[in-house]
Amino acid sequence: MFDRIKQSDGFTLIELLMALIILGILAQMAMTFALDLRKRAFDATALADGKNLMTVAGNSFLGLDDIDYNHTPADGSQVGVLDTSGAPREPVFTLSPGVKAVIFGDSPGIPGGGLVTARVYHINGTNDATGSGKREFWFMIDEMTSFISAPSL
Image (cartoon, rainbow, N blue to C red; front, side, top):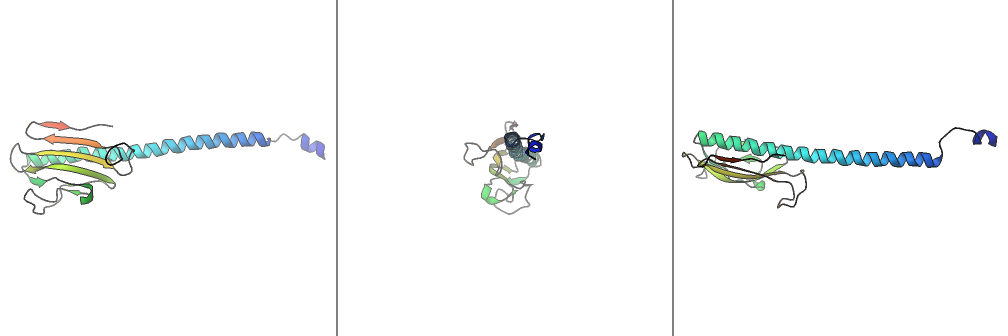
């Protein structure tokens, strides 16, 4: 009876443990890679929102719209809900879920007077040593000098 057990061609316990260890290491590497991709996708969302915001601001300059773009993360996701005199208006831009922005500037409705700067980030984006703790993207559009600044990933 013991001769049959000794002659079996199965795996030893050490071989099985080594296979499980290798699978565990591969699973950990895949999980780390997937989480990094997810954070970078959130960063791309914030970057796209910033670029779209600059497009909206540029269009408001051309249309001579009166918009107060000043915005903090506590203001929610709607941007441009007031004009420069403080009267309510329809929002000109809505940030994607999870995207936060600190925006300064306005489009006063006079030619050459528009200036908007924005710092945009996603709450689930890549960690960074900034004020928000996340990777931030800085944007600027100045109507007087025709200067537009937009980062890329």
